[in-house]
Image (cartoon, rainbow, N blue to C red):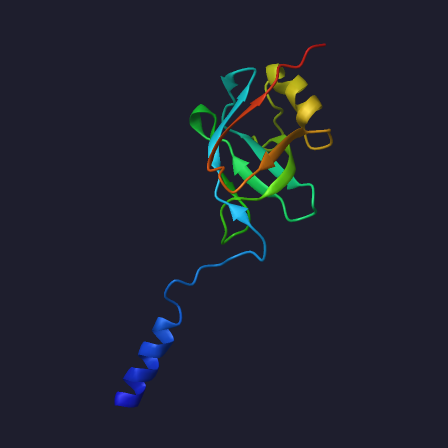
Length: 135
């Protein structure tokens, strides 16, 4: 019985402090997303695509334009370095984004140039403002 208890204790200790970690730097990031200074509504998401080819991260927009970036199922954040941010409509199937956001999606959407940003280790809370799109 003592051997079994010791074995269990060693097994349990091996997991203390263990959390998933990427083989590169990932910074936990949250913040707000605006379009021309106004919070972007729910049903949108932003994608952070690292320029160095690492996996992208996603931030689903919540009330007030707030988001929290998720890198993988187990890891929150965005890889450090230069990245491109794009915005996506996540609304109900078969619906389109409101007309006022169509220019935003055309300029900064999935198949666009996106908005450049550099993520550093000191970044934790970011404010992302997509500039107004003029015709």
